[in-house]
Length: 255
Image 1: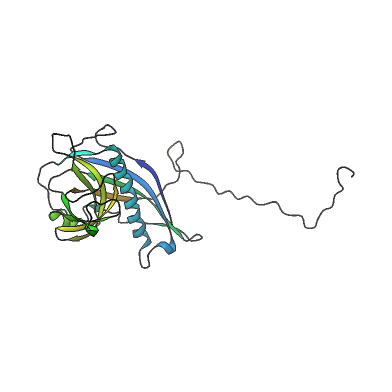
Image 2 (image 1 turned 120 degrees about the vertical axis):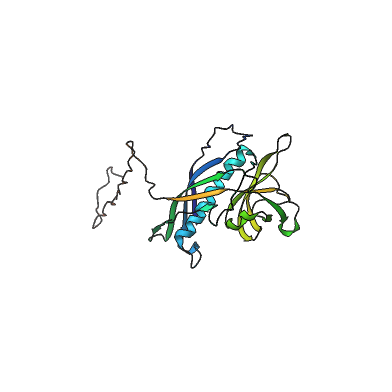
């Protein structure tokens, strides 16, 4: 298995300081990733293109989430009318994911552009109500039980961030402390798995879904100065042929 993450670009709609950044409208970040898998590593019966696209979504989202965690994302939950999302609204996949296959190495690979949007809305919020194994705290890759609203009906496989009221701030401001992904939806309850955290996750912490779109990048050849994609020439170096019979030569100096 070979997974390679490259070239993350992060560009918010409003310029923000590197830490303690407060943005109440919308956050938008993007990353470009390459994912490769050996043929035997792809589960039997799984479509390689769909499998690699999902792995690309996970790695791209984790890259964006790490940027937000590093910045110390602060936000306010905005009141407003929130329509019930449909299935697939939180995770928008490329209908033609495609995949490159190297038959000589039995390796599948693909490039993906992943964009993550987060618009704080009071109606799109859940709460962690239980931790796996009766723990009092959780961290990365632990399972959590989430209680939410009707929006959970369209949140299968959606990504989310975990937040907690920021200490020492008078306004009702939330601080991002972790990330995760919903693995199963049960009505207004859902099971999720944490990805990264920078603090211990506890019962009562808020869960806020994000919207993710992933698009296949079909051509990643390096561009020339005029912006056109360069064709990479194949150069083959032939070894020098060995002599057909050993050649004897006298030593340069007498012994």
